[in-house]
Amino acid sequence: MQDNLNRLIHDQVFAKQITEIPEREWRETGDWFEKPYGNANNNEEVFRVYSKGLVSEEMVMGTNVKMWFGGIGVAICDTRDCCVFEVWKSVGSDCGGDVVEVKALLEALNVAVDLGLKRIQVYCDDGSVYGYLTGKGQPTNNNIVSLVEQLNLIQRKFAYCGPVFVRQNNIKFAFQLARDAISSQATKFAENASGKTLQEECSICFESIYRGQMFTVNKCLHRYCFSCMRKHVEATLLQGMLPACPHDKCKSDLEIESCKKFLDQKLYDIMSLRVKEASIPPTEKVYCPFSNCSALMSKTEVQEYTATSSSAAQGMRKCVKCRRRFCINCNVIWHENVTCTDYLKYFANQSSSEAKLKSLATRNQWRQCDKCKNMVELAQGCYHIYCRPNWLKLNGLTEKICGSNGPKGI
Image (cartoon, rainbow, N blue to C red; front, side, top):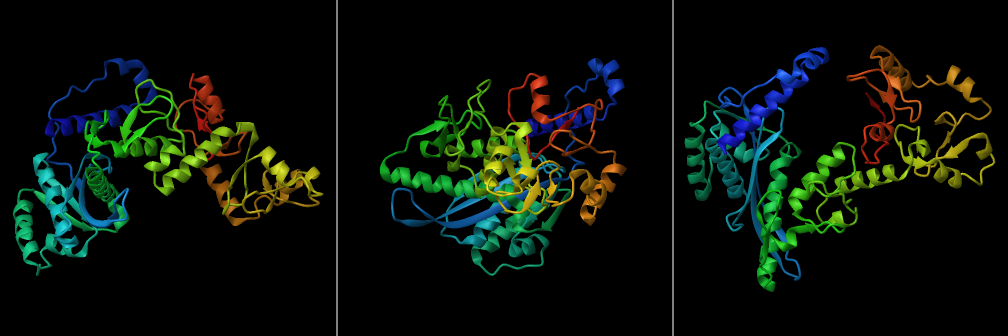
């Protein structure tokens, strides 16, 4: 584990150094730039340690029985909050939520010791646990007293161990891992009760997973565990793309309805939006100009929705979501009896927010894509702008992605 962590830190530092090399220098000397792997020094970096212990009453699948299950999750992250190590375990639920929280923290600190970390910040959302870490809280439960003694001993193994009290959404890594542990335990109990105890190995995380927690890609029949699939889909969606099968060189698309098994509502909504974006050609995309709506539509969709209106021939359209009127020709709020040219000349910057955006764009030398009108910031390369689907096509890529991410400076 220590060697894997050292390699990960080495690779992250190396990648950061590469991105900081000027383009001209990279073209001239990039082929000779190297950083041989050696033991990374983990004594200076302060790692972030997240832990969470949960006890939850779950409905056992296939039955009408509710049972209590316990789980702990631990995530070790670097200073950029990139997860470098994670673990989840099932624990007994009969000892109570407070005991499980302390057990989760002990597990996290033991993992940090095993990884050879010397300087850590411990993030927790439980006030009692935070009190035990700082020495300001004294346990009254005999079961917790012995655990807190272990906690005090293991803290001395670090050169620096700083506790940080945060909200629950700040420890989402560990919280989700604890939920995975509980789900796995509930599934295992249900399969044992029904005689279905078969397991198979996920080829991503190499864990033995019960078949009820394995996902099958419909088109290619490749199988992966729910946890790995959720992480794969989340990472792909956050890059503005539609997820496909994670198997090497497999191009099978994931069907959104089948992904409901492992996606939470937020990710499901993002994936639904990506699917809609991919189904509308770039020249057909229309976004509602009202900032508190911004719904994505197609020109055909809004045309049909507004067909009965007498002003439709002049370019007036209605948003299918908020039902407010806007101009399809210049993509602003509807300006009756005013031409698009006059409106853009005299009224476009009446809104204080629009004026601020124009000022900010001018100051930062942002440009607008001629097709989708989204703002673009030049990060690197030349000054040509392509709408994202055209850029993908030019570079030999087949993914059909566009929409809220807008154009890309190249």
